[in-house]
Length: 98
Image 1 (tube, rainbow, N blue to C red):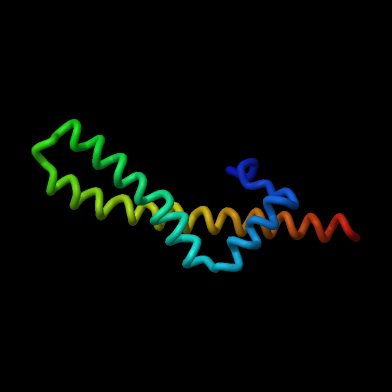
Image 2: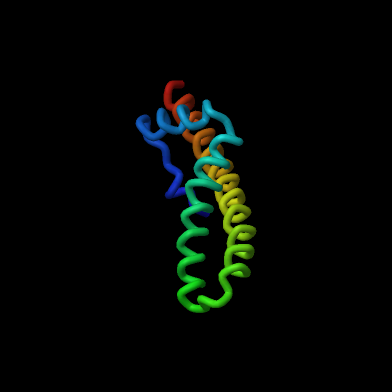
């Protein structure tokens, strides 16, 4: 579906190998939860508070639940998609040598 966004070049493959060496857990937490979930929490909390400033506590609770979970799911999906593309890239590289 999104194969065109996950095409590796030698440079991007080297970068992925470096990220990959840190492991899935590190990637999901740092790229997913902290890299995507935390900024989304801040942005959406500000957006929601602008619309309904009286519901600070509820907004914080709901966003503190939704965005870290969403970040975890996004990070796990990105890891899986990148791994699939990397596997395809390495197989094509091996086939090209033969």
